[in-house]
Image 1 (spheres, rainbow, N blue to C red):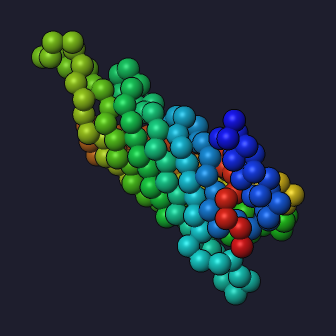
Image 2 (cartoon, one colour):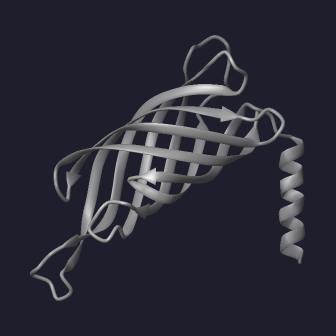
Length: 170
């Protein structure tokens, strides 16, 4: 009961002080190459009107959608540049980063026919996000190329939908 009361109090407190320009937002992200990921996005400097692009970092950790059995874990990190559009709360962004994880691969030389492999790659991203003005919620949709170096060199296209709660506002 104490936990629920504390959670409710934190939610009301954050909601009361919310604005559309967040510093940090945390939530979930689904898509490819990772699904069901915990996701966080943090703006590196305060948003001002003197520059067109505002830097941010985004990170996700979650299940793997790559591999034979689609099991494993992937960590993604990206540096992004955000730019506002004419509509308040609407921004587009682009950037790139890394993908690191552990995935299962087929291997006939092992007892169970599977082995764990290291997954590494580089990811590009372009997307659009909207932050609600009256509620501390941020929704983002992005896509981009992914080049994998291990376990096999390959090229694929990624995409994701993030729903995040704005924690710290400007």
